[in-house]
Image (cartoon, rainbow, N blue to C red; front, side):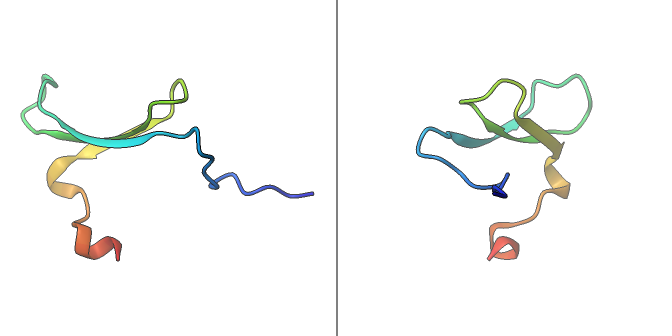
Length: 55
């Protein structure tokens, strides 16, 4: 039986944050599943899509 790797369970905790502590000159937008080790991604904050673009 195939499973959906993108399906969430009630134990998943997804958060987003702007990280300005990076040594680079620009802020980073970070999305992370804090219930799993190593489950995160980041991009330059000014390149992140706006909320209206996600609808």
